[in-house]
Image (cartoon, rainbow, N blue to C red; front, side, top):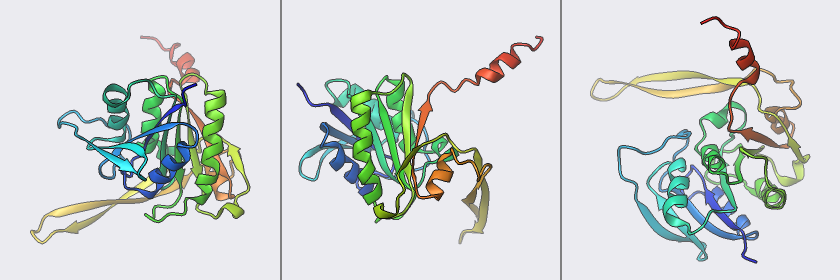
Length: 255
C-alpha cells in the first residue's frame, strides 16, 4: 500500500526550528511534502493573498524532504499545495510546531492554526502543534515526544467531520510533563495596549503590546489550566461556528 501523504506547514517560516522538527517526525508515518511561508507570518490568521502574485521556490529540507517556500500566508500555502503542488489529496495536514502558544483565543489570530483549519475546510484531517516558547531555539522535545502519537492516532482513527485539532504544550522538559489532556478552549481575551513613539521625522508610530486575561483560571477542563499545570492540551476545533443555542433564541425575534 502507498504510504500516507502528509502535508506540513507553519506560520514561522520554512527555516524555523519547529517545522523542521515536525517534518522529521511526520516522515516516520508517511511521505512528506512541506509548503511553508518564506518569512514569518505569525498573527496572520486565515488571511489570503489577493493583491500580489504568490511565488514558490522549491527547496530541500534535511536533504530528503520535498519542500517549497511560499511568499504567501499559511492559508495560501495550503491552498497552493492542494491546487498546484500535490498530485493527490493528502491524508493528513500537520502545522507547526509553532514557536508560541496558540491556546484559548490565540487560535483566532494564529496562522499555524489557520493552516490546519484550511485543511479541515477541504475535508482533510489536520493538526496544529504549538509550544509556549517564542524563542528561535525553543525546546521542542516535549512537543516532539507527543506529536508522533497524536499523528499516529489521527491516521489510524481519523477525525470527526469538520473537526481539526489544536495541540499546545507548556515550555517544560519532557520529564516534567504530567501527560496529555483533551480539553475545551479557555474563555479569555487579549488586553491590548499600544506603545506610542515618534520617529526621527517627527511622525507618530505605535507598537502593539498586551497580555492575555484568563476569564476562567480555575477551569480544570480548559487548555490554559492544563498547560499551567504541566499537561499538554488537545482541543478539537469545529469549523461550524454557529451558536445553536443563540440560534433558537434569535429565531423568536419579531422582524
